[in-house]
Image 1 (cartoon, rainbow, N blue to C red):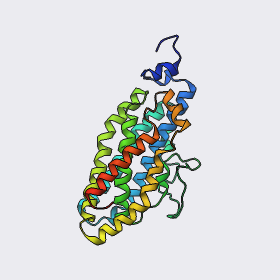
Image 2 (image 1 turned 180 degrees about the vertical axis):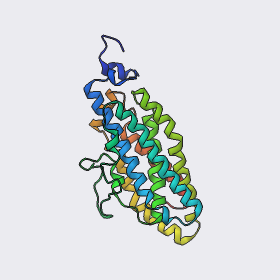
Image 3 (image 1 turned 45 degrees about the vertical axis):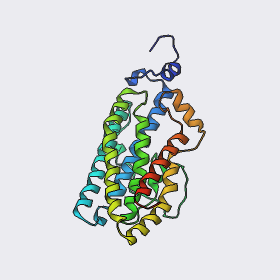
Image 4 (image 1 turned 90 degrees about the vertical axis):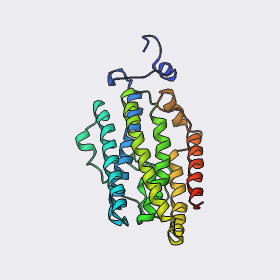
Length: 251
């Protein structure tokens, strides 16, 4: 970084930072918030899927569920390690909160975060059986892939490298969900239950993209932590989900 160029200008022009020592207090705060949201969402997501492993209808499905739980927890740990380089208490972080805690099924919190918990709002809702879990995995997995692809370009280089390594595995989680959904949609009873779950989860996953014309996005963009507006990512997700569900006659 130039000794005379303001950090925001440097970052907006595609500059990257490689060490906590180079980060301003405001940048550190925004970066830690972004990382905490990812870590909390991964831990909460893993905790939710762990409870569904015994609902799986077969060994193959149980293995897929266990793989998702294992890898999401590992991904949280890899980002948490970077948080530790900024001074986060990593030893306490993963165990200080009940990640399996959920609101009621009927709750509607939009995109709001809960006090002391940075998980995306969708991870506050409880799963209800195997088909419900598969639908949530497919819809949120597709969203997560799009959101994570955006984060592979963050201006903090060590974090961008971790996100790039994580992306293929997170994408595979969605592929596992789609395999399971194909089997579910193969009979009318399963397809009917899947459509009901889609009605429940689709608006809640959509809320995870945040508000359109977000002032927070503008702040993150100035630091090179975001590049694509929320509404563009949401539109990409809507189109991808429409294609997935149409292929299985679930629209």
